[in-house]
Image 1: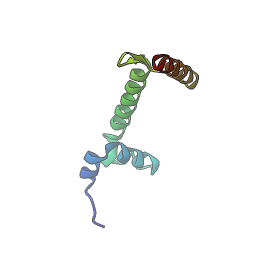
Image 2: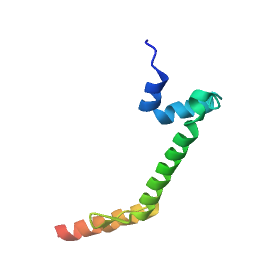
Image 3: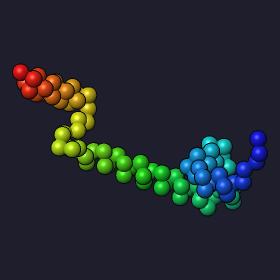
Image 4: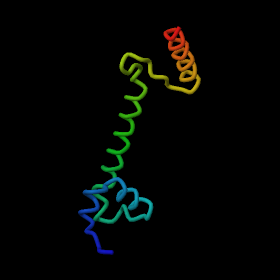
Length: 88
């Protein structure tokens, strides 16, 4: 196995390298100190955006998107009833 430069690893896998630095208590080293907190904040910001988009989306292609299991089951029962009604 060949050695990979840290700069290449930080560019290709920034979140994984930052999490590795935190887990191994080397985030305070000069090579990591200036960018680890930025990468972790960016990761958290992206995750929060995805979560908010998930809860904001209520319909897709004109069909209501269920958000929990009971809502999903009721929607499937309604759709099955519509399909059976159309087949008759």
